[in-house]
Amino acid sequence: MLTSSNKLKCSQNNSLPISANEYNWITFYNRSGKGWGENWDTCLGEFAKTGIQGFEPSLKNAAQLKELLPYLEKYKIQLPSFYVGSLMHEEDDANKSIENILEIAENAKRIGTKIIVTNPNPIQWGGGPLKNDEQLFCQSSHLDQLGKEISSMGMKLAYHTHDVELRAGAREFHHVLQNTDPKHLYFCMDVHWIYRGSENSQLAVFDTLKMYGDRIVSFHLRQSENGIWTDTFNPKGDIDYVRFAEEVKKMGIKAHLVIEQCLEEKTIQKYDVVKAHQINLKEVENLFNS
Image (tube, rainbow, N blue to C red; front, side, top):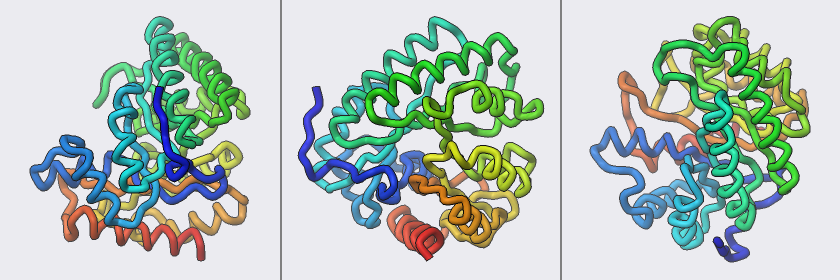
């Protein structure tokens, strides 16, 4: 059983602190030849220097959360949400994933976590066959089941996508959201994966916002220039985030904001990880609070 101090408790859903996803830090550390997570005291100490109050880790199991907890408390970093992978398109794998996620959720609930983000794994990362109709039905059914159990715990399960779900007419993406109960399964909109998965289409970004805005509980925020991720977030890039933020406000969407500005192979890095995230925090605050 995990325990926590009151200082680690997160605020209510509509006022969760801006967070940074763990993947950002992995890419920056890899670029500099360091290993993210090898020493949590050092890693989260550096994270705390950015001024970002929330952390969204990628968790594999409850033991990882237990390992993080003392350092989250030490540096007063909240855990409003966490990301967890899952296998949902085959019955046995889905049941194992549900059991694992519920165990993590039960422990995270004690420290005030509000949102659990999951992206069901494809059959094969980096290409390969797409899920067939039977597998998609299996996946949606189990996501709905898990979402119902998460809701009963006072938290929200949010569906996340990369680019593969947008293939073949986005049938996996739409099937999940069209065949699950909005009261059970919410949507974490990773804006740039919608953009990239739709062949770099801003139209797809804004259409997705219109179609599923009422289910969005969190945004993963990343920008690119000429199709390449930049090391810092700038509202003016490939995606018109100024317009995006305006639309979000018009629609009354109160979503958790998660910075996921990562490095990829062709990214030109101008700033170290701390300075980059300080810039990211300032830009996201100004964009969504102006």
